[in-house]
Image (cartoon, rainbow, N blue to C red; front, side, top):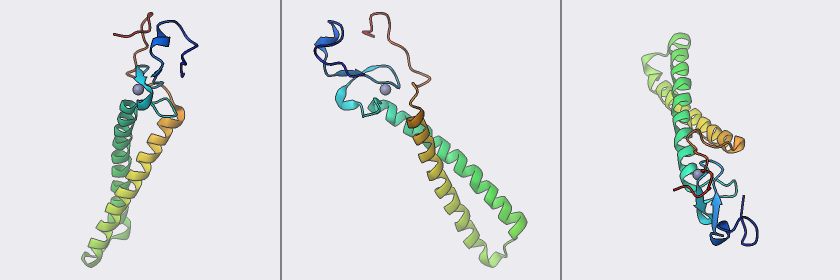
Length: 126
Ligand SMILES: [Zn+2]
């Protein structure tokens, strides 16, 4: 994806510091793009999307655990605080794990974003 000074078409050789982000297909400064060819904006967007997955999966897991405790364990009022802490810890832990997994999966699949717009025939964009 890198274009050096000697290769590529004539107009591109004037912008040797520009690479195409594989995620949004926009041309970005080399400094903004990491080794997977994702630009800063795309990494932030993927992080946000992964965070939503984390909250969702963590919430479902915590709700399931709370239900299980409520129906199966039937804690007495004395130890209820400990179980609440357990549910909160599970929510945090599962949520964090799911977030990292979701982000890792997005990075691993390395597909372009759904909102990505391929550059026009000229390749110059706007
Ligand atoms: Zn991008």
